[in-house]
Image (cartoon, rainbow, N blue to C red):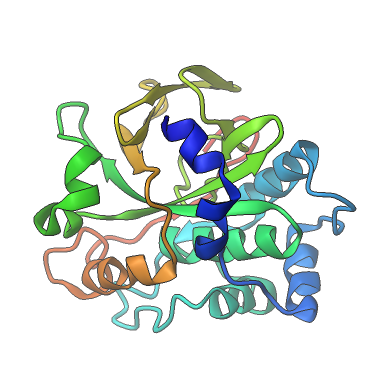
Length: 246
């Protein structure tokens, strides 16, 4: 099954995110106001994810100013977050956070995902996994953390989403004061947004197999940060999630 396949260490190791230097990890954790966890536990994951969502804004101010980020290297983004007190958008924040978690001893994989703004929009599913045309619509990086308690989405790059990590299992996921729904699909998971949240999107699909490296997002990062028809080139957004609001 998909679950058994993804739990095998042989599938996780080749796609592990890059690690960060210790000095950068210390500065990153200082920005989050979090101690270095003694062990990679579920409690530590929740604390780190919530701190990141609360203290590092989702923003893409550089793009409409005509100076999009030149690199998706996690060290570049982590330095931006830790030393420049800046935020970023999904490819940056999720990529850097995946590397931070990996360096701290968590078992992490990264996955292609597609955010949709209307409930009627077609999801990712097979096309994102297999179709070059649909890969051109790739617009999100999803971070999965594998623990003994199960698999968890640790998403710090959506802004208007859950306040903390969500377990990847079918059903309703409550992250007060909002409710989200997780649906297992043939190719991974669909995560539904709370319909009363004044949301910026309706749902997103993540493709679990295969897990990927940061290189899988370079083309989408360039396209979305430079193309004239990109929704990120014109508007400006800065979003910060707290425990009870957005």
